[in-house]
Length: 365
Image (cartoon, rainbow, N blue to C red; front, side, top):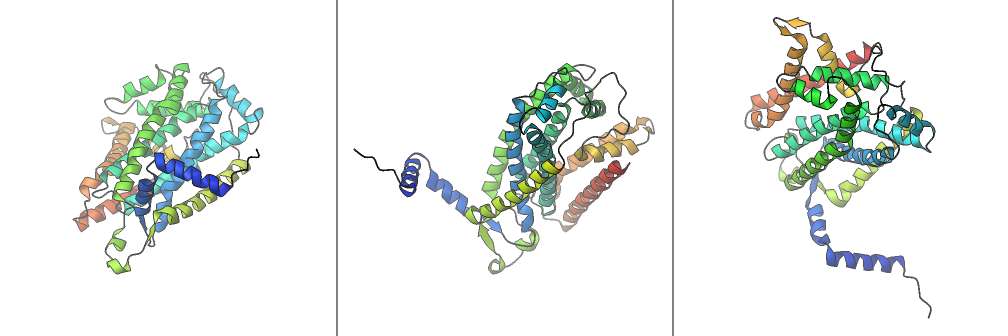
């Protein structure tokens, strides 16, 4: 008896029938097709969330590959990264992809955050979408901070030490949090062990839960529309289906971003400094990663004392007030008051300009 091979068309039809009998594919398809994307001059910003999600996928894959060889011990961490860079096939590529991908993901999140802010996407009924987005931003910065120490080279060691010293000056709980993160009074084996667990276990668990809630809120309330589009007559508004039209465009943008990421990875592989020596003096001109450079520079420019209060403490309080402003902006600007809307817009403009100026100042100083 001769068996005839099943054609690809028949196999696809059988697989489709099998899945439709067991999964609510029709309901999911209807839900995806229901979502619409407004078409206007600001539509470009809608791609940023997808770009950040794609880069997060790169981080997950490359992070899992790096975990195969990385050893979270102060006597072996640097050597394991050096082995990945020099002895493991394409190890340098995976590590550089992970490092460059982290920086580009945070950049995409910053742009996504401020684009949604200036389009007033935090207003009712999207407050939960805004707050979960802020939490996701905080988690990704936590990824950057905890991951920075893991190679255990001199720059990452002293940058982490300075960062924890600054955090310890936050009123009330700062000293306790810094002590718990360090695992004592100094950056040591306990620190790298805790940072590793936070980086590969605790933060991913928090990320998955918050990201699920964030995407659910986006699905429930659909994509926000700026006032310039919302105020148009219904006949003048243009939409396109998210699936498959916008989704296919999304994939094209992801491919372009991946090409840029691969280009950076191959043309400028991520470096590894000398192994950290806790007893050596800090390198001259040590600086944190670019996304922490603005607050770092702001604290540097603060005077030693502001009246009877330490200057760094005043700087931390001011930065905390800015963060609180972003959290509370949905309650301040509901859209009912033009004056409040303008105040919220100017608040965002001042923050963006300050962040850019302080970051550039930090790079040049």
